Length: 148
Length: 118
Image (tube, rainbow over the protein chains, first blue to last red):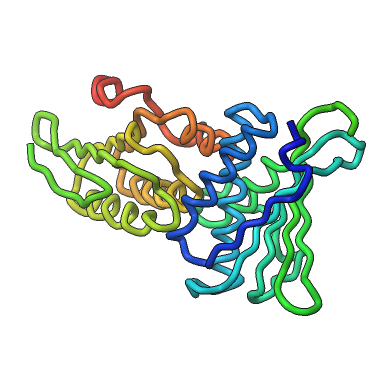
């Protein structure tokens, strides 16, 4: 089913919470189309939503007009199995990758759950500052054990 | 029984002395709505209930900012010895609590009726 991503799909939104439901609808439909079951689709949708929330809050500091580009492409995971790759590119304030870490869940406090969700749901997560500005977050989710 | 709240939440007071607040939430609780959700929850707590039941059966989607609002409420109700119960979670909302392992921290009931009965 990854055939539907023979060519990558790219959408561009502004850094406003008002556009998050649009992305959720796209991610849910696209993940179902490429073959994830409903539970996996829900979780991937949540992970992408959390990553976008972090970009709005920390890269753009709540500014509603910062560009965010979301690219979906088919990929292979580290073992060569079929996977979905989702890239989020922003042009906001860079955060050092080693500053982004999930918090300890046993601490009962409201913040920091988003990174935990992203790293729990996705199989590979990589934050990379872009030299010309901004950050590229690459998230990969294995679809099946079949080799590409 | 009295009603209050906002477009996102309705609040009903029930029980023998009207000391149980039932907060009925609806829609998507994400970055757009979580601040309003938290404001209503903390207002309910300030009114001095013995028990708060949050009905989530009408919530189709919740992100970590919505969950964080409930975590903040939980921390406060524990200090004030108020009983907090969550009820009627959809499968999708329950999944967020499972990923963050908060399903073991909150008291979660299948329905409001069951949350009020025990």
